[in-house]
Each structure stands twice: as C-alpha cells, then as structure tokens.
Length: 290
Ligand code: R5P
Image 1 (spheres, rainbow, N blue to C red):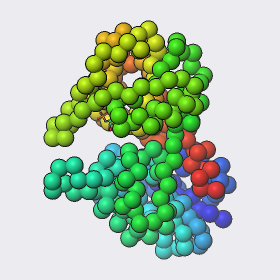
Image 2: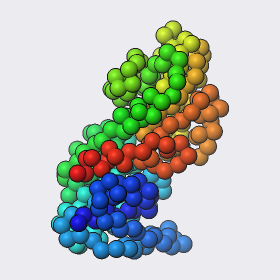
Image 3: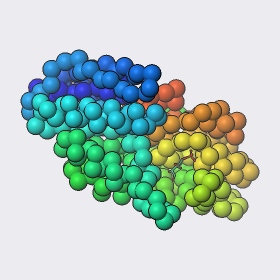
C-alpha cells in the first residue's frame, strides 16, 4: 500500500488526498528548536514500493523547504519511488536571471530535490513552468483554475468579466473565462525589479463599466498587484471586484489592504491554508497521482 506522508504545512490537504487515494496516511511531528532548526519524527510505517510526500513551501519558506527535503530523504531510505506534491512551490518566481549576478534559486532547489531522492514532483499553478525545467525528475504542473471556476459558478454576478492584472497571466485568465463562460482582458502591469513596486500602465477601459469583475492571479503575496489593479478598475467605474487566486500568501496585512482598496471577496485554493482558502484541490491532485 502506498504511504502518504503529511508534512505539517499541508496536513489537512494531505489527509484529504490520502482518503481519495486510499493510501496509508503517515503524519509527521515537528519540533522547532529555539535556534530555528526543525526536528521531524515520522509517525508510521513507510511503504517499500511507493511513497508520496505532501508539503507546501510557503512562509517560513526556508523552514518548509528543509522539512520537505528531510521528509524526502528519510522516505527514500525505505521507498523505491518518492513522489512529492508541493501544492505551493516557494521560490518559483526566481526561475531566471532578471538582473546580472542574480542566483536562479529554482535551479538550486531542483538539484536539492533530486539529491534528496525525489523521483517526481507535482505542483499546482506554479508561477511559470520555466522553473520546473530545473528539476531533472518527472515534473507536472496542475491547474486549480477548474476548481476555482466551479466555486464562482455558484455566485450571482452582474455581466461578469475576467481580468488578469498583467500580461503574464493572460493565458490563465483566458482559461478561467472559457470555463466560466465570459470574456476576459489583461491589464498592463510594470514591476520595478529593484524596489518590487508595481504600477498599472493601462489607460482608460470602457468595457469594465458597471460590470462585476473577477481578478484572476496565480498568487497574492504583498497584495500590491491586486491593490493597484483594483484602484485602477474602480476608477473605470466597474461594479464589484472579486479575486480568484490559487495561492493566497497574504503577507502581513495584505488582506486588510486589499479589502480597503475595494475588493468584495478573495477566494483562494487550499494549497496554502487560511481564511480565504475555500476551494479544495485535493481531487485534482489525487487524480494526477492515480
Ligand atoms: C506576478 O507576476 C504574479 O503573477 C503575482 O501577480 C505577484 O507575484 C503577486 O505579488 P504581490 O501580491 O506582491 O503583488
């Protein structure tokens, strides 16, 4: 029987996936020492043939990363195959050298996963699939968009329009709109590579006037992209704005600031547990693992 190891950052999601796969759930117990080190103990037997490790790498990113690698390494001592589900893959935005001298951290992580013993990695809505090329093992990116769309189909909206905050998210917005049955547009966003500040460069937009909008993004970190987009769209006299995103990191008071900017609701997936994470992706993940 396949063992499914639940890392503590994804306990609930791992439990849901293991039920769907009828796998043997192995919990992990973690003690964080005063100096920040993690000490992990596995609470169950590991299969000799195949194990699945489920652990998201959200903040504290480095702690969750070392825990993931430790789990892989320990499980590999028993199991021939170690498949790793990382619902949210931190560092995925560092997939290329934007400024000279920058380290492509995804390349480092790719080597670490392979070195620890992972034979396959599955992620959900990774920032860009370019990052997965640094993993020299089987790598698969799943989409939470169909699950998010199903949630939005239950909300009554006025002449809805799907909006991507930037051109990079255009395909995602298109996929959402096609499944949802609406039009979509993508704004022009510019991010200062040094300060990280964002600015919307799109000028007037008549087509949003009076309509309910669904802002679709892969992730919310500081909320800067969503806040700037919302401020712009509100000036164009749209009706309500909803946010659909896969990974809601919502660093510091991002949620409060987004609400203050005028967003009616943030709906995210349970790749990162939290108040807004109402869309369950366990079925999508379990299907890919079968
Ligand atoms: C950027 O291209 C991504 O798709 C997100 O829009 C971005 O990473 C979100 O970050 P923040 O919330 O800090 O603007």
